[in-house]
Every structure is written in C-alpha cells, then in structure tokens.
Length: 417
Image (cartoon, rainbow, N blue to C red; front, side, top):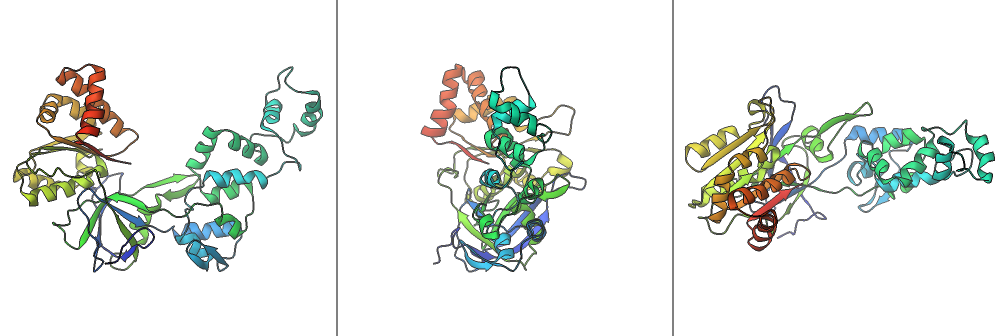
C-alpha cells in the first residue's frame, strides 16, 4: 500500500461542493466531498485531511507583471526544474509576504545613497535639545527636507527594528504590495530563495468512514476580504471554492491522524461537544460514528454562529439525530439573533450545573474551533463551572480542569486553530 503523505500526496477529485449557508448570509461555508478512489487511504473520526492548494492564477500573473519577470523562465525549486509561472503557482506561498523578505529590503532600498540609523531618523522627526550630536547636525540639515514617514529607506528601517510594526505591515500584504510600496527589483531565483515553501492546510474531517465509505468530507469556511483595494482570500479555501471544479480538477491530499482527539473506547461514556461555526465538522463525524456504534453513551452538542436562519449547518441531520434520540441535548448560541450577543461559552455557563453533573459522571468534553478567542473563553468558563458547581477554590478548579481532566484523565480534548 502506498504511503501517502505531504511529500507524496494522493491526487484526487472533489465529487461534491455546495454552500451550507442560507440565503442572505454574509458567510460562505462549503461542504466538500473528496473521492478516496483506490488510494487505500484510511482515517478515523477526529483525524484531519491535509490539502495542498495552489495560488490563484491572477495573483501569479500580477506578481510576475509587478516584478517584470518572464513567466516562462526556467527556475529550480525544491520540486525540481519548472517554469517560473508554475513554480509560483504551486511551490511557494505568495498570498502573504514573510518577515525574511521584508527584512531583505534593507539591502535594496537607499536614501540619498547612504544608510540612516533609526536613532538618527527619530532625531530628525522629533528634534529635542541635547539629543543630536555635533556630527549629526550637518546630516540632519542636509537630509531633513527629504526624510518623511513614507520615505522607503525610513520605512524599511522602522519595519526592521519594530517587531509590532512589522507584524502589522505583513498581516495585510502580499509580495505585489511590497514591490509596489518600495519599487524594488528581485531576480526570480533571488525571490524564490526568500519566500516560504507552500504548506498544506489541515481541515478537521466532517465524516465517519463507516458512514461514507470511500469518501472524506470537510466543512470549510471560505475566507474572502479586501485590503489595499484588492480582493484577496485564504489560500486553500479560495482554491477549493473558485478553482477546483467538481469531478474535473486534480487536488492533492493526505491524512493527518490524531492521537488524542478521539472518541472514548467505552461507548457507554457520555460526551459533550462544543463546536461553533465550522467547528461542528468533527462532531458531525463523531455523531455519525456514535450512531453506527450504537453505544448507550449520551451526546450533548453545543453549536452556534451568527444566525439560525443563515448558519444552521446540517440542520436536517441534527434534527434527525434529535428525533431518533441519538442526540440527547442540542444547545444553540446564535450571536446576532437578539440584541445581546450570545456565544457557546454563555450557554455553557447557563447549563453549568448539568455540565458539572456530567463531568462528575465521567463525561468527555470536546471543543473545536477558534483558538484565539472562543477556546480561551470556553476554558475560562469550565474553570468557573468547577468553582461554582464543584465548590472548588480558583486554584483547585484550575488544577481540576487543566491537570486532572486534560492531562491525567485525558477527557478534556481540543481541536483548535
């Protein structure tokens, strides 16, 4: 059996791709189905699928135009010799500039033929008595008229010396933006030596292999935005939504198994699942598997998004689980359906007494979704529940959630990104 991996991905096709959102939604969330064909690829619920996307053709064309390159020039990459256009299309990350490239600008940009220190620039901008040295005065007098906040050399010096400003700058820009900002030239080989290799994107699998033999399914939020008067998007999500045609386009995939985000072996154990937005993906898979396994364990799902009308993903399936008793409890948090914003952590707190009762009976707790905000808020809520309903001190509650449940008993499991 072939050992498919990021270095040797399986080439497949998408068999289905449809939007899950209701009419009028500001979001674009797709259900995408891949054919595993004769690959022999296997997975379990909780695993992720790795997808190797390609850059949008228009972005590649615009970069080559901005840089003044020959699209047919042969270059050597980590994937061998190929045309520059193909290398930029499929070998490198060009949708967002990296720090290494921005720092390389220092050698490309000059002002009046000389390098100016950041300290000197600050003295020019903010003259304070006693700051300038005798040697500075002549330089300051000569250069003051030409040193401005938007001066390329000044800007590069500032970005190179201020980590926060550098992060802010690269967050919304790609290489086309930078080349236009600084009017610099790089040879193609020089350029590809600075940019990052294209990395796979991992997506929580939204299907049980037993429920969908020969297929693997995803729930993907398509990321689109506009910065600096240009439409942009997430590298992989836009590739899947815009470039991949059902049953036509080749897509490179591989499995990324999980060791920890798994269902309890004992099928009589209760589970609580918290997955707002696309975080519902693995719990669709969990529920499909739990239904097929026929265990006696109860299932409680917390789900939410902006509006019930437009973001109730897999509504018919969820209602079917409820009707047949497979889903013991379904708790929703629609943040924009009322004046006060309600999130899954608010619903957890409201049901704190029952959540704690489930914990005391050995229930597993799963969370999937946003790492930066949602997961942190849910984590804090669990500690509050342990304090309020478990009668614990803040220290003991933290120890119980973070050490006992997470590390020792391994029944608080997270798939966050």
